Every structure is written in structure tokens, then in C-alpha cells.
Image (cartoon, rainbow, N blue to C red):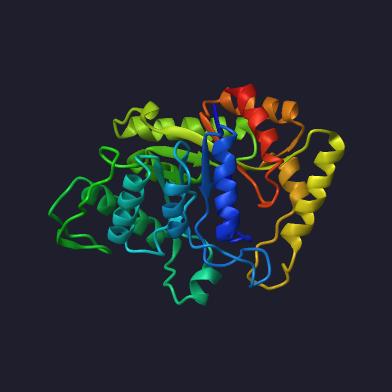
Length: 320
């Protein structure tokens, strides 16, 4: 199992923090660094920094030489898929083939409203996502490309230079619902889950396998990953301190009607977050390995706590 770090870039990420974090993750030998793609904080004050996603990934390609990285995830509503395909191809080339492109249908209605971005009903967003993935793959294959799409028609479009990876970066989709699992079976190279327990994951995994078999696709062709929050400390007292910090940080400014409310205690109880010492965290993650998860992206909210990442490296060595 490979262990990486995921940050919610809309929750205080700056260029300086990103550079320090990237270098530390690579220095510690962790597998990868992932980030969300939003324009504003989901749960904090409106002036909380939110470093633009794809610009930061371009920087990451030069700040590091080894780690894998990508988006969890870029909404198809934010950018035309032809633009996203070209951006991803460029970053893949800059990084010598270390990018995974995570894409999604988009979920935060308030964020779209604030920036004047259309936010269709969920069924249409999923159709746009599937069509957009088709556009991206077609452009990565070369061109010229002509597609009579409902949402993203192309007329003799090209996507040169092509990505470093052939036939392109892996496309990751997140989600555990029925519609998303069917889409993952049809289009994804990697399935990322945020379920709270290996038992619930096993049920969704079996459903994904059945969807793959229905369309004649090998289920093992889809890589499997899990993302969850993390509070880790070298002692139980340090774990308690980091849990207290997380409660305060995630509740800071969450008073508006559109902000996401998060209960850290509920997330830990339900299994969506892992809390404990390195040994305890390693045991929890080993259970995910037993149901087929091969890489884990652990959410790291305290972007100034670079020392704590050394404890994650301990976990990574234990579960490797």
C-alpha cells in the first residue's frame, strides 16, 4: 500500500506553504501529494487563502522530482474538457509523467453561484462528466478530433504536445453511489472512495465488479484508492491535541448558510477520519489493504505542521 498526503487547497493554502509541504513530502519518501480543486473555502471565512489548483500543480512538477500527484478532484463544470486535457498534458510533461487526473461532476452549488458558473442538475452534470472524459481521452490520442457531443462538440481539434504518459495520465473518479460506480466502470482508471469502513467498501467494490463484468471490462484494470482525514500523534496526548486543533480550525467562521459543517468527532467515529498513534493508524490502514485498496490519500489540514508528517512516514513504512 502506498501512502500519500491530500490537502484541501481552499483551506489556507498559499504558495509558500505549498512549496514547503511539497519538499517535505518528497524528503520523507511519501508516495504522493494530492489536492482539491475549489475557488473558496468550504467551511471557513471568505478571506481564507485558496491557491489556484492547476497553477500549483505546474509548480509542483518543478518543486519535486519523484512523488506522484494530482487532483481530488477537478470538477468538469469549472473548465472546458479540451482546456483541461491540454493543461493536464502540459503538467504531465513538466513532471516527466507523474500526474493523475482526478475529475468529478462538481457538487458545491454555492461556489458555482458565486462565480457565475452554470450548475446543472446532477444527472446532467454526470453526463457532462462522461462526455468530458471522452473529449480528454480523444485529445490525448492525437488528432485532429471531431466529436458530435451534446455538450462539448469538437471540430478538427488537436492536443499536441501529447502527455508524457501513453496513452495519458490515469483518470481518477471518486464516488460511491450507484450512478458514479457505473460511470467508473465505463471510464475510470482509478476509483477513489471515501467510505467509512472496509465492510461498506467491500460491498461497493463488489457492485463495481458486477458493473465491469456487465460491460465486459476487467475489474482489475481499475486501480483502487481511499481518501480519509488524519489526526496522528506520537502519544495519545498529542492525538488529542491535534483533534482539538482540527475541531477549532474546521469550525472557524462556519456561520454562513452555504458553508459545509464538519464534525471531527463524527468523522472519527464513522471511520472517515483515522485518529491515533502511528501503530494505531497503520493497523487501521492495513484493514483497507485487505479489501483491495492499494493507495491511500490522507487529508492533512494543518499546513504548517511539517513535523507531524514524519509520523505519516512511519505509517507508510509500516504498511508498505
